[in-house]
Amino acid sequence: MARALSEFVSRKALAVGEALRGDRRLAPYRSHAQKLPAPTYARYTAITNRLYPSARSQPMPAHLLPVSRRRFLAASASTVAALGHSDLLGSDSQVNPNAWALLSDTHLLSQRSIDLHYDNNRTAMEKRATLVATNFERTARQVLASVETPAGLVLSGDCVHVGGKEEYELLARKLALLETIPIHLAMGNHDHRDNFSNVFREQTQSDDRVLLENRHVSVLKSQHANLVLLDSLTMQNADRPVKGPGRLGKKQLAWFEAVLDSQSDKPAVVILHHNVNPSDEYRQRTGEEDFIVSSADPFRGFKGGLEDTDRFLALLHARPHVKAVVFGHMHQFQIFKSRKTFFISMPPVGYTFGPKEAVGWIRMLLRDSGVTLEVQTLDTEHARHQQRIDLSWS
Image (cartoon, rainbow, N blue to C red; front, side, top):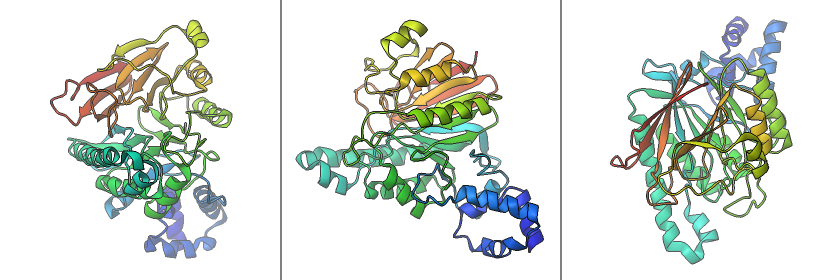
């Protein structure tokens, strides 16, 4: 048994196995762990300590792994916890390891949240609750209908509208529609970090490591680029639907800088919720943005974005391997370039702010020298539907 566990660890599969703690198949391995040779037991201890730190109340990077036996074995071929990074790619023949489904602003809304916060606007919000739930389901069907299954799906914040426990339980049920795809979640200003963590610890197979205190951050490795997920939720007004302005903070920016410097051998694509909002002084030094794809409705401006945008952009612009930044929050699809970095504002899944904007998602196809973005709108007659944009790294 000790020999079997040693081989299991050497294949880096134990990280996935321990993440699925309820799987009884692993009980014999855990019970014999102390019989391992010292070097192997040290690896076992390091992996499990990283997965399950003592501070159980801390947020974890949210990697929601498929639970079928087939997917369990596929995930076991790679490492889920190695130096604080994740390689969570499907390995079926129809999975494209370079394709990613990008979603944002799903804004799922529960009846309890309406009762607590929208009693004076109940009818309109109940209609919205139905709309966003339907849009989520339609989006899930579109993602699953893709000719090639994406390696993973990233939801870049505002997963729910108010942040209540019931809303995250609803989110968990909706995400079950995508059970064959690894899912990675970020936080937006409508989310609630603690409620999210508590619900998803109970209901999903999550990567339970703590990379940064009180923030959900991740690095997802793929063949052509590293995806860096940041957390711009401040929780300034924890009991309100909008929790506060977007801010990364000094500790997260320091973590981000260290990640970029330690992973400079490959292009980086950064994903977070809030849009950038550079100061006039910073614009004078770096120049105006060059818009590549304009929004369908009039541009709403950058107001309400990251409060520490200037520091964030300074880190990006000083590191030429950062090729793109993907964000939500604006509910308005557009692409612009600042210096040599592309900025991609996501279409929302839940609802738009303008009549011409599209509800939908983006299929991102990473290449060695760039990325192709395929816009998938729920209204298949929309002018944006299946629009392809090729961006070349310079």
